[in-house]
Length: 353
Image 1: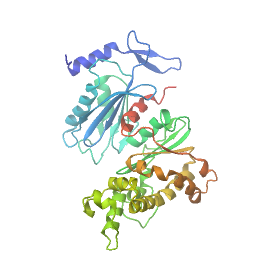
Image 2: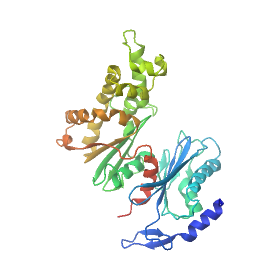
Image 3: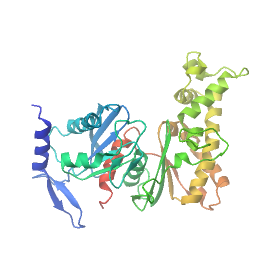
Image 4: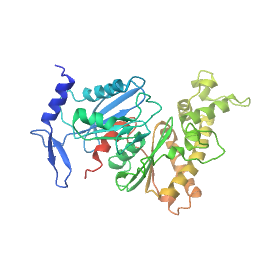
């Protein structure tokens, strides 16, 4: 029998027992259980809310999705989030906390969502306080790249590393920095905007208003635009990219470039290599600035570029003054499409051993 939201929440509070651990942290335990309750990770996007229960080892135990009402009232949007959360709490299981990946800009210290372009429903919205008052568990909010960086550090590809630089390369480029197991937020919470580091002050204008940001040069839309320009040239040779676009150069996307590359298409390879050409000096700047002990990349474009990782590592020292650049591992992220769920959950685990 389906339970009402009020019943679910009350049942959750009654079954959750908060047990002090030896190190002073608090673990939620259900009566008769031996294992701590899981974390609940929430990934809020412009069109969907993904949720998942994640254990202390980073394993996603269950997950679900609900539509996000991004253009409605603040309350309607909040209701979409709570509906998604409740969909995984129908068994009445307790949780240790809720971690939320939300679009920025936001304030990770207060959990206030400021003015995200793809969530016009929320302006200076106290998301963490709202959720905490409804579920009575600790709630943490951060942007998706920071949270994913922490998940990779705690449970994924960067486990065991101390100075982690993470980048997700897809329709945009988001980055996160984790130092000694903690997200580096900087003075105001705005650190880690590596996608808007410029490598060409005369380059194309990015959506942020700056010129030559790596996002406008190497993210998915840039790859698609580069392909369309090459295919539109009079001297262009036939390419499998055009076949995938049903003969229309205007319809070409970065995904088609990746698909064509996997079939051995020369033009697709040329386009991806040009993307590598702009990523290498950017990564060189990152290495010289942060001296990380690992570089982790995720996202759809990163997956397309994985065959070029060896070339990136070989050429990276030529764009660095750091004498140890060649020794820094370049790794594919462990969490793929579930990075937001794992990232949200990892925000709850930051203070755990």
